[in-house]
Image (cartoon, rainbow, N blue to C red; front, side, top):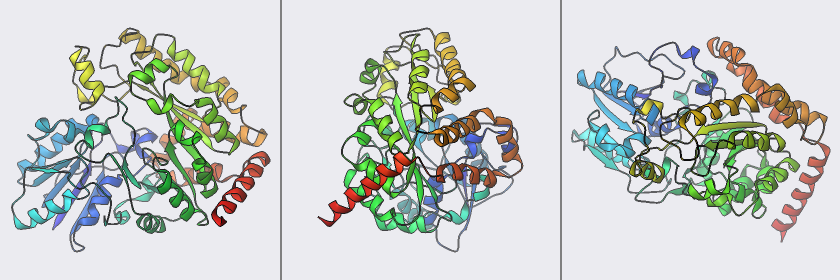
Length: 473
């Protein structure tokens, strides 16, 4: 049995080598995880169109396509192409869940919500020749799911191939979050069994890991156990968290002790009114500045994310956000234009108010304005977003942000990291096109691997001693 699993790219023409580095960061773990359900004697091909050329000349027995909003048109074209040949096509992903009626026209079977347990049901039906049109996610746990088929992933094509996910969803419910609709009708946050995580980590070479979970610190008892198990494995890792999880208790200390070196935080907005309007309650009770200081003292680099265009934002939000991010010494910053994804509370509100400009899904990429903001014009939102990126990554601001670090060594490392990420795009293009990303990976890992300042080492030794005493008690 021949199966083709496809992650379509947004771009419909051009070589994968011409695409920005962000498309070459992480492999498609969702498809690689589902591939573990197939019988061993089936022929499985995994094609990530972001980094590979997709051939449509074949006729497999089954085609699986992961659909998200900005690749939906391309995904539907691929699906229609194979169905015209008589090939069975199944569709799943965030966009299929939120736009079921639309997707029904392009697939023989569709998956609503996470498919960890509904996919085996489909496989049984497929073998028996009686496939249902829609498969719903009923069971919400990660018990007995197969190991990721990492043998299907071409590691050299990715900057961070050692990525993994140990949970599904998020414990919080922000109005603009795309994933709330995906988990509707069941648990919206649950974790994988620790022993399975350790077995997956055992497949990964080297020492650096990247957890792609929406909230690695979202379940305190689970995360403490995970960090306890990872500690001593000589691994370093990156992950994502919220402000409150960093400042509440000592979970972040356990993470650092286990090897955390860099963390992604969705600050989203410096305006409390914008946070309130988006139900970002977890950022309201704690000071973001305190979280950043704590992370800096622990030697953890901070990558911040911000959203522009929420209802509490005015034309001054761009400069104020950039100034704040630079003054806080963020290592990198990612900016987004607020985007009302179908199925979210934000979308429903914007649509009800008649503020949607269009439903051209390929433009719902957080870089374009697709709705009418309240506090500024559409032009001001787009121009302010573009300027924020330009301003934060100016040479002078990269240096100013780096100077917030504890000593000259940390300043040099942060300056190199930030400048390398945004100022060397021609070099990144060359590395992607020449297949040299593994060499760049070594440089990135050396920065994360480097020792932090004496102040941080002293603090870490104290934390380890305290944790050790608590464990003995």
